[in-house]
Length: 375
Image (cartoon, rainbow, N blue to C red; front, side, top):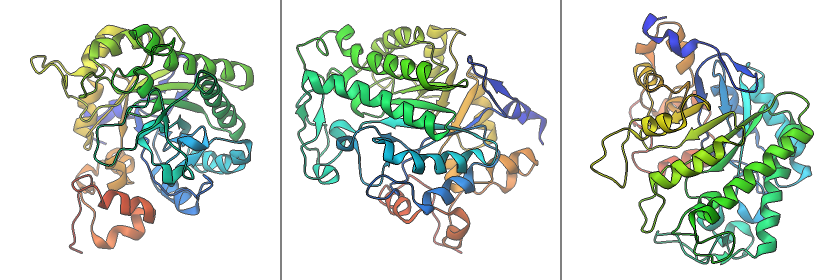
């Protein structure tokens, strides 16, 4: 192994005492490949099995906590009936020595009524997302908000019973938790909206509910993470300063890590073009050393992974790099980084074990993966 990459393979111990073999995380990526009822398919098992060898921590694609919060092909953690299916997935990931984290979420206004049986989408407020095909959601009632908080706790309980090593609350990427935090999607005038402190209430209550569930049901140390998107481009939208205030509050909840969702790991502010400081450095400086961060975003090469670690974060997440090259860890550790696959060719499909639905999904997003039609 190239000595320059030694840091990638150093073990890391979370605040709760759980250790991982190295600093590389498999980022959560939507497979859209679960059965209609949310059960895990063989294609998904094969997809994870092919990519988890050598990865320190694996975060699954998002699992919905209620049936009205899913998109087509998403995992389900919405009922106890899904525990056996989730157990098989946890076992698949852990078989190679990786720690398995179940990411839990609710799609909110970012779904479609067709995917939830014709029901109207739900969100913090009846405000449509700024996209051409967006549907107008209905506002969750006070009682429904309380039920939603509890649903996240129940999903965490199922993750514990299924044998996962942890859960990650998905408070990023414009899904329901972010919708409550955002001044664009949350126009409520009750205790769940309006002021910044009221908009912070839902993510914080979900966090506390999950934490209480872990304390009640987990017999062994259980990793507890939270994913967040630092800014929005919408007006009004989430600002970096607002996110820093939410992070200050989250820091008090004894999380084991915060996962910063970025388009590029070294990107600066989306809203303040005069600020050239990488967002991850701003967040790291604000939070100090008390809570670990995971950074993600266009980390493809071992040099980029080392650059990300050198920002002071202890863990780096790889997404598309592991889709294109499932043997990324092995090749870097063996000194074969020059052999890392950087594009997908037509004769790679069997080796990559990408589920058909995932293949169709990435094909629909030009430029998302590097393709070649040459054999």
